[in-house]
Image (cartoon, rainbow, N blue to C red):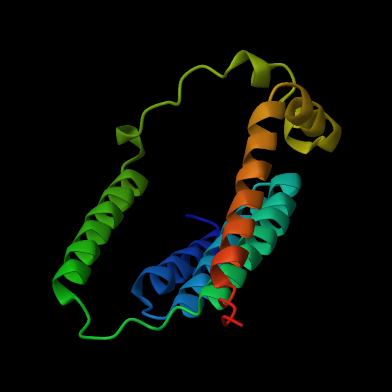
Length: 174
């Protein structure tokens, strides 16, 4: 029997994701994505991965979503008009039902699930230190992953400059 809090936060995450996909207004879709990301952060907290939960809230639900909302507000995207595409929605709901049935089958019959395999060597020694130590995470981030981190920052900066330059109103000829 799954934990009731897990079920609640999983439903919150799926509800936010459904709002993200089903909404025709971009701001409402962004709010649905924030709700889904907060549900994922709550799942991290339930797994005692507090550092990952805080990072999820700060980085994704905070900074990235503020950037998305900033872009949406600057572009001033109108809500999509017209009839709702029921055929594509039905196909998506059918795929969701199929995935849900598979998940229920795996939950009902645990013998169908396979073991994950051997633990990677970098996690086998002290998984607690790697999961809970901000110092170890920071050291790995700034030694092994320095270039991808800097490239991601440069990409976000270029996107922000591009949005600001595109959203500027052209000056009237004098």
